[in-house]
Structure formats: C-alpha cells, structure tokens
Length: 52
Image (cartoon, rainbow, N blue to C red; front, side, top):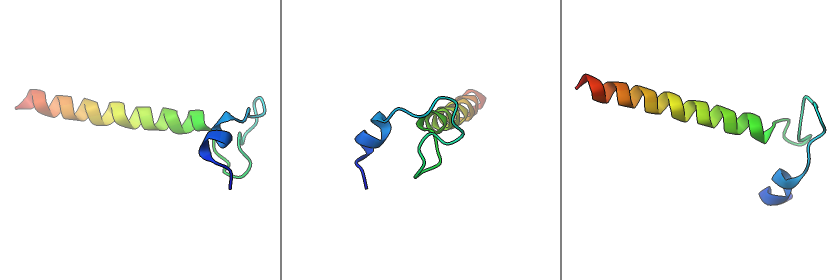
C-alpha cells in the first residue's frame, strides 16, 4: 500500500466521481466533512457556553 503522502499527492482525474480508485473518496470531500463537523461542534459548544 502506498504511503499517504503519495496517495494525496496524486492528481485526481478532473470531474471524476471517484478521485482515488482504491478508496472511492476525494480528500477534499473528507476535509469539507471534517471542517463542517468541527464548525458544528464548536457552534454547539459556544451556544452552550453562552447559556450558562
């Protein structure tokens, strides 16, 4: 299995439904999901803090 650095350095096919064939995921999609989750968790935490 290739190192993560090599995997993420590979250039995905433009507008391909699967950027990386072995994984069927796009790093950009993963990062977007992680960022959204962080923003949601931070938003709930801040709102809970304001309630106190």
